[in-house]
Length: 144
Image (cartoon, rainbow, N blue to C red; front, side):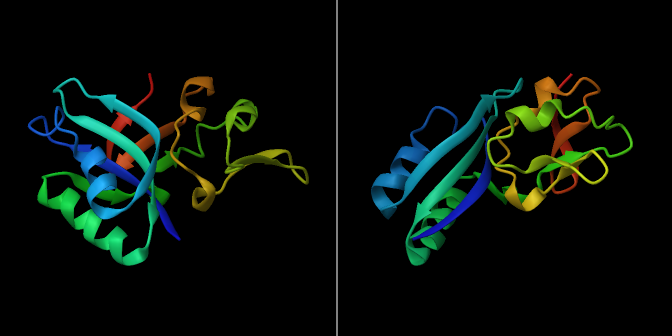
């Protein structure tokens, strides 16, 4: 079984269509929605964990792209501004994957992007708002 966490950005023309449902049904894939929202311009944004056979996965991702959905690997998408972080540890209490943890040797908060599922639970609890989500190096969501 192959799995990957993806960020899907739906154009406003595709938001009302059952694209993800069709993806699962037609390409024998399973999914877990980690986060989803409709942006102000009515574009859709979804963080999705996708499961299935690797060949089905590749064909399914191509289906998404053919529908006009921008598909990005989520592993590098949540960014932390290390200069802003005050190492309070609030984010570590809500991180479900252990991507944020306190290093006991120096009591600094460590962020391991490889473990991050981009669930965004850390964003609202951070008192200094040092997290943002970027797409190809361009911020598309900041929690204010």
